[in-house]
Length: 481
Image (cartoon, rainbow, N blue to C red; front, side, top):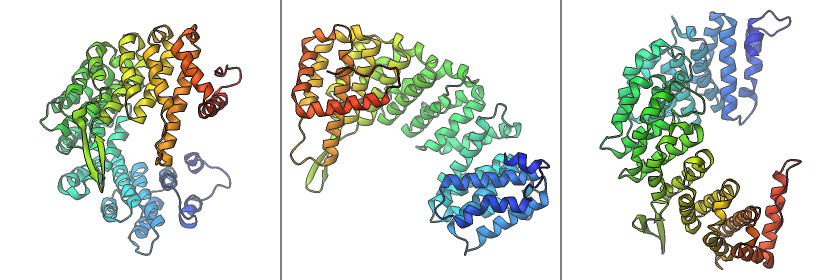
């Protein structure tokens, strides 16, 4: 809309300076603007400059922004806007900085030393925006800074991510950028030791050049560093999209080699492999369907509680147990839930239910909730198989409903117990919808317990009210007990 307004002869439209004054007024007049507001106003400023076609006015604007950034009396809001807008000018109207006395990169870099996290993040984004507009001038600057300024590395990698993210969404990446990939890749690999920003950049570069770079990424999976292996596997997550892309065919041929790291010796590498499998199952299940016979045993293996991963930590006078396997176990159950939705035909349901039962007995709140969600899904998708396993399942549900909070329990613990009980009640209501399920004695016993307890009756009413609110007109609400 702004571009149309500026570039067309519309009667009574505001002049360049007047329009900018109107667009940027909130920066000067409105306190506590959101980060998104600064980004939007800066982007609009860049659009006005580019659409006007008046390079002299655009350069005057850049000079004003530079003065505001240098001025120690400028408010934080004005400095934040100025940094963003200098970057957006470079992104949308790169000619502004050609044959100009301004060196925007040297104006922006000092903001990395600010005490304001917002200003530092804005500077990283702005530096990346400059390179989006002019790869030849600003990309080598960013790469050199990454290699020579280790204290600024995190922010500089954010700047590089801005460039790579832009190019990875282009149908045809700019050829100048393609020619720079051979310079970018080794810089990223050198900093791949435990940085998710780097993993994202590696993955998005592979989207741009899958044939050339995926073999290079595979080599990192055998690195002696667990953190580098983790970055290599995490990079795959950033190649997976629900849209059809050229990278899919290449990734299909080698994703199994990345997912083999589910048997890695390092817990975190195994966890990120499960995260990648979960992402593929959710966004593009065709990538992994043919591999599930090999992969599922590793997924199921991670649902087990491992005593050797539980350690005792002293916190003042108290001793507290820490389960180092929890995140890994949770990822396995999340993966199972996704596979149930997207790859049901590849699952042996009775085996699958065995591991859901592990989750019902798990001591961790989130894993139990995931297991209850899977039971509800199984009640819809595989009711006949689920009914055959109700004895053990109902025993676990009954145990959860019988748990009483400790006398010294804090409100958060009580709320978590109530949440689990409400989840169990939803499962029971879902099970009761299965034909002939009411004949099952164990299920009838659980339902009777829910009716006889005032506490459980009250929770059941809450669950049923919530269910009624979520059903659209014409849908059938959950049955009462």
